[in-house]
Image 1 (cartoon, rainbow, N blue to C red):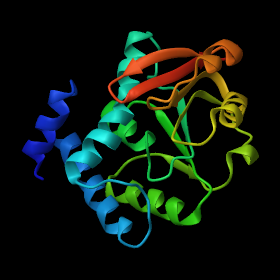
Image 2 (image 1 turned 30 degrees about the vertical axis):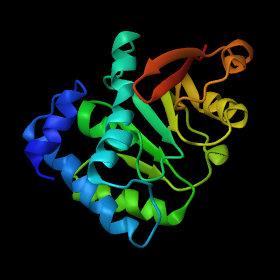
Image 3 (image 1 turned 180 degrees about the horizontal axis):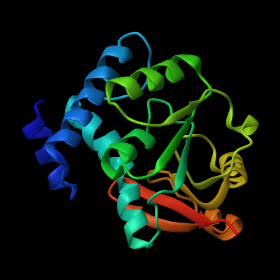
Length: 198
């Protein structure tokens, strides 16, 4: 896949990329492929699937922020259980103007995140420990494919002093909205559960 093809896939989903941003996404893709041969970082069957299922799905948060009129500029965003960097790294490449912290407990994934930071010339912080041990507070806390909602939601709320966003795909339970006070934002891949922390 070249820069032109990558940009076309993003554009078809409503995200226009500059050549520089497209090149960063391409490098990110290539590094994921290399590391995936030895460390199972993320599941995908083709480059197109990696772009659509992981890169563009991560950017569904951009639409969510804009539609909800949430100001992310200059804010501190934490990506909890970041894994291979989703949704944090795609957000950082695309939005740029915010402070990012990636929280990940597995050392091999932390090594990948630190390596990619240098390769992509991005400015973010990696905290290599379980989220339960993190004592910092963040304006916005995001998570994707982290685990059972009932155990994850309180953990994310403890880290937030503004908003929590959880990308949950299509398996959304009505009880999560009623019992936990979350709102639902529909995306192409399913939905985002979000809550304002007071």
